[in-house]
Image 1 (cartoon, rainbow over the protein chains, first blue to last red):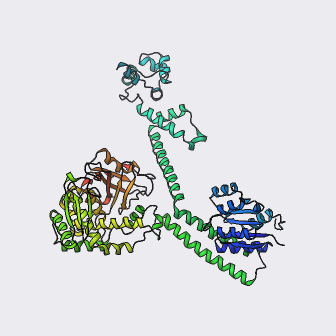
Image 2 (cartoon, helix red, strand yellow):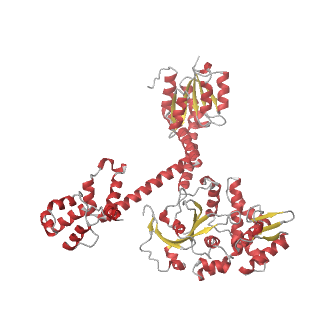
Image 3 (spheres, each protein chain N blue to C red):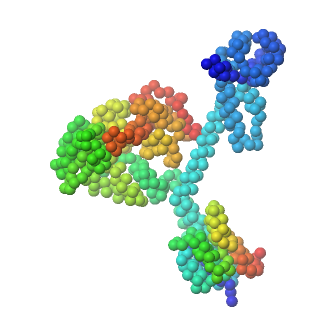
Length: 127
Length: 510
């Protein structure tokens, strides 16, 4: 059974590219376009990993991360934050709240795939 | 008293004396002999181990034909202290100079030292301005939003470009779809970068996005319209025609009659003894069916006329004001309300100082504000403000800039048709000379400056005090500055005799 990745991002083209990359890497992909939807999906089916944008409508990425980390049942979910260049404070805050890693926009697709595989213990053939 | 004098005489001039001695080619012994002191004592003085006494100073001046006071080194000490400060800047962390080298340099090259200090001051101002600008830009909501959007577009473009590059096995449909995304996102990025350049150049089409506060929004809107509103000019002319083209001294009665007879608003002048009874301090408009406009008797005639004309604008010409308002991009309700007041004030100014008559008078009287005030029964700020609105095509007045600042240098009004760039952020530097007005309240100060484009500007400034909300209450005092580029200065009486080859100040970067 493939490992699951939840992409939480409101920008459709970024969702499109991430979901293509994750599927190509062999993961099952779910998509949430805002913070509330992300939490609903985590409740219904906790993913193995979340690619979580910070600037989201309704509930931002930090709020989502806090909720995920406050529930013991979800402590195994790996969370990789999508942060913006020049916003070091976001990265620090995210790591403080319990994120496992981060990638900085504009990111390299190879870095994202490599990082996801690394956190899910999948051998990266490209590496 | 004597002790104070002794203290004040602790002057060290070692380097100057050494420099003098080396210039005339004497040994310490030879110089000491000429002025009848021991070589050992001269040595101590030269090394600033002993102060230069008046007696010794006199001897040196007489013996070596030195200009009186040249050795006492007041200027040298000041220069040395300033140079020490300069070289303690982190900029010179890796090239510290010891005090002897610096002292010798200052003594031998005072002109170069002064030029260095001037350069350093300009550098320090530029550094401070850069920091201020960086702070303001990083806090600007437009900048935050735009940088987020830019990163988003870039992320999409980079992702799809890499996907297309790294995946040979894409279907034709996928390849076409991803290529289309690339083209779309690139177009969006291009337009966003274009807008960003407009923002940097202060020309955002969205207008309101550049403005941080409602006041800024209104200032930007007025500037975008060159401070000239033909619709309001026509409306003001129409009102004056209805009033029977009153002379300035008849304007009060004409406006009061119009308010009463046409709009059903009674005008009542309230005696000082009733102070505190007016809702807005110096005036109030209340009651139904027009109501009563109560004005405090202590208001100047110019303020009474201005207030009445503004009420007429808001009541009888509301549709005209609304029409102007509908055509300008303002974001917040507060900005719209402020803008409505500004347009009402514009109308009032145009009623008190009708365009063509006022423009001709301004040239005839060579922009003597005091004479214009008397002729049109208007206030100093009202006249200055009206001068900035003379922007009718083919019938322009002198292109002026206008600045209003408080004692701290905070700008509350700014407009520039003269080409001078008035800072948008922070406080106005004293180099602009506007705050000098606070040193001589009520008097006209003159100031010339050269800006970073090497253009020379001339301005006058004067304090004005707004009446307090209550009679007897201290009001706010501002400095008003009105200026123009030097080539127009011949039209300004205050500029007669001003030497523009030596401006009073030079703005940063010049």
